[in-house]
Length: 126
Image (tube, rainbow, N blue to C red; front, side):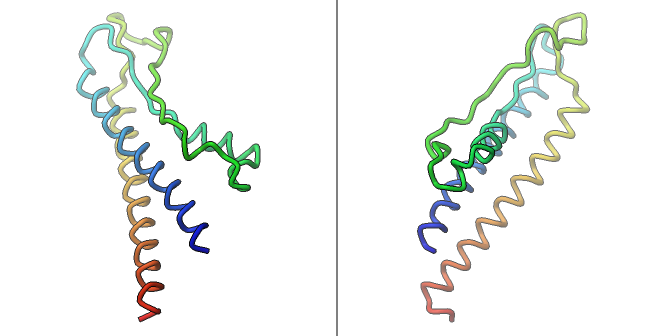
C-alpha cells in the first residue's frame, strides 16, 4: 500500500507541476495579448497521461510517466485570427486560467488528504 501511495504521490506532484507551469504560461499569454506576432503557448501534460493510460502502461506501473517532461508548445501561426499575427483570445485565456486554478486547488486538496492519511497511519490511527 505504501508503494502505491508513493507512486500516486509522484504522479500527483507531476500533475501539480504541470498545473503550476500552465498558470505561468497562461499568465504570459495574457500579458502578451497586445504584442504583435505573439503566438499563444499551451502546456501539454494531460495528452501524454491519457496516452499512457490507454496503453495500459500507467496502470501496470510500466509507464515512463514519472520521467516525462511537461511540454510547452506554441500554437501554430495558422491559428492567428488578428491582422497583427497575434492569436491570443483574452476571454479564452481568462477561462483557461479559472479552470486551471480549480484544477490546481483540487490537486492540492488531494495531496493534503493523502498527507493526513499517511500521518494518521504513522501515528497508529490516533
